[in-house]
Length: 431
Image 1 (cartoon, rainbow, N blue to C red):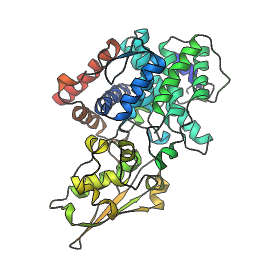
Image 2: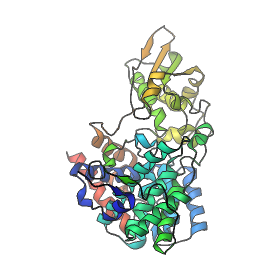
Image 3: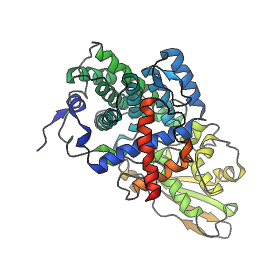
Image 4: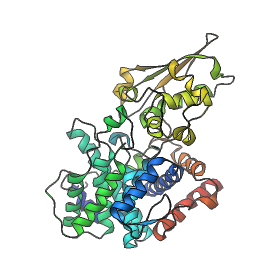
């Protein structure tokens, strides 16, 4: 029987050797996935705004801005890299959290690791701690509050645990760090960004920065009121590893839309399919997905929080990738289809959410044909048997040829981590 432990106890006593080989592999590939996503997201406008502002507000130091390799303070790097990590909405997620733990935990951990010049093993252990704490905090938060708070709120707690671990905090200090992050974390009312897409999104950059700042405050003696999470006891620390439950995203858009894009992809792959002959499109999906924007996008945030734009691109162009998420948004083949799309909320699919995100697409054509995808689920769920290959294929696609992989990740700590992880791609290719 496992002994119940609090989050602060777990964060300060966990050892990397506790991970099974499969969990260790998932952890490494999760960091590789984030590196690839950040590399692809560098052209997005929010990434430049975030790094420039972070430097102005929080100053310089030994931590790296992944956008352009400038050196920042740990808080500045966590903010800038947290924004970059989620700037395409292509980063990993966890179904029960309805959010993105890696994008807030990994930038925070690596920013602090560079500051203290931690080893690769210490970095990976801290990231593992951050994931485990963040996901449990998210589930607890969703159970307690009716409003849907995005990743930055609960992710700040995981970021603080990871940062405190790297600072060598004891359990009492880590408890203050976690409680400070909970107290100061952003509200991140995500449905506001769903209704009115903007750069605010999940509040991930702010959550990463808050977690880092909280750990440094606690390390200097700053105390906190008692929070929900630092003293919450869990008995499953030894039986469950949340990194094995993570999903990967194939498309740069909200996870809620991804099953519909997969459904559209199955139709666009039908031999002889001609998008010019489409007369109507029905997307059958769950209620949260139906809340995504139905208007033509004018910027990348609107494209990412859209249900209809990714589907229109997939059907009209045969693809929806980074280029389509970043614009241009005036492609005639995609835009012709937008007014032909009707969204239908299916109560049975709604009942499956958030554990599963399911959709189907029905296309009718001018010659009277009806093409139906059937019920589909996004690729890369935690139980997807092809998870590792999907991670490696995605990394190759986003990072490009091997000589370009370490671009913008050249500081000592990050370079060491990535040199280990990028070998995974070579091993995968050799296999």
